Length: 193
Image 1 (tube, helix red, strand yellow):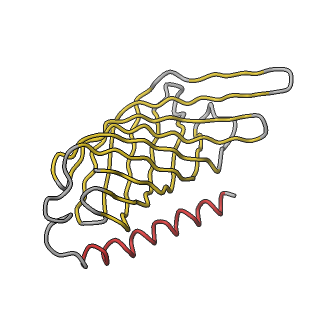
Image 2 (cartoon, one colour; image 1 turned 135 degrees about the vertical axis):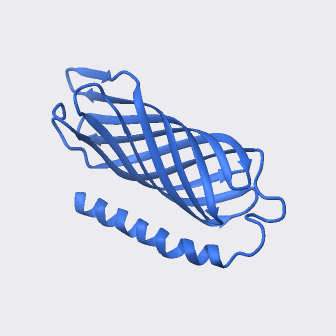
């Protein structure tokens, strides 16, 4: 499973690296149409990837995970947006579900049309739920400092709409020594402007 996730991630990176420069060089004039993107922006993305734990307090290495992201914000310019982003990843196996949510204030920048870079700072919280035949257990950490970064390619991009393929990474800084829960995902998303 880990090998399949690594191959999927590598294919995603190769797709972005290969297609982004070609799409950018084919465009002339303004970044998006005549007026460019402005005003409020919002969107969501779904995907999959890797949810893992590293450090002394980690008893298990989680692998494949689902990914869900919501964002809302405002365009500061046709090439820059300030966003509030909520991103969850979750892994379920047997009766156990492990998740991490990361909420950030983020900045997304389009250096060229169809290609964006993003980074943000905020908070994260990890949780687990066990639903057994005789016992149900649920627990979560406190909110801790976190960051996330991402890179995306928009095969469809207009003044009012974007369809993107994105690679994201994020982690929370938990107080138990060097323990960290890592989110890494490849997603397909839509944004409205």
